[in-house]
Length: 336
Image (cartoon, rainbow, N blue to C red):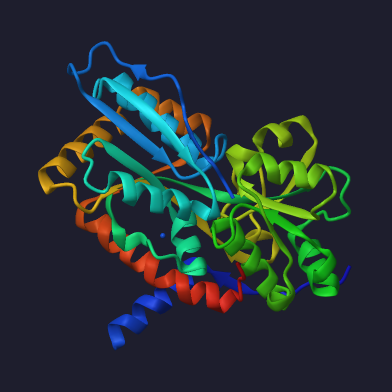
């Protein structure tokens, strides 16, 4: 296959461009888990609902349940209920959360860059402006994987195939407009195939793995924790990761000559009508949970990076991420 020239395209560079410009002028059903987890040493009567805007098993679900477990283990709350409301990159869960829990001081919404991108692409009535940021928790990177026997061996092979026949080079990933879709768009832009990218959105990493193993997709994009079992078993093979440096023994896409890098983030929100003093209580509980040993062990096990941010810093970060998402989606020619 012909070799592609090294082309630099990174979210960081695009963020800097947005910031500089500003100076000059981030289908599913609902299912409530029947069990309620409890912590014996927590204050009596303390409780929390964690709304996860995705189906079970994906990155948001892993994050929400890990946070809930750490909240219990730290004694910050006495019981936790998890509510999964999947679909459309989290925008269905976002709308339901605002409808049901906008003034509820005992409900958190798991969110992140996927939701920011989905809102920018789909333009729903309920947006990120309808929730209030509490804390940013983690970041991780996008792994580009192929079936074990795929002829695609490197990111440059994928770029060459997209350039030669994008219509028949299906790329599978998470929800439309989310971080997986954005990264697929960045790779397609390097290949000069933005307008002809065929992106196959799925509700979670398990479905992306299935699409790859069945041959329905030529390449798949997801977080490392969602691909890890299939990579370890040899069913899938990683050809690159979206970090600037090697990650978990996987060479970065950048160091292989295709300088497209991107980091995902996840955090939690609360309702706009929750009083500030109750929001402070939520923040204190989340901070307590993320300093517990159980949270640290979960971070290590899932190969996430701790990415704590709260208060005005997180509000400013979210404003910039939201402002950047629309132009980035336009630049990459992403379609819903």
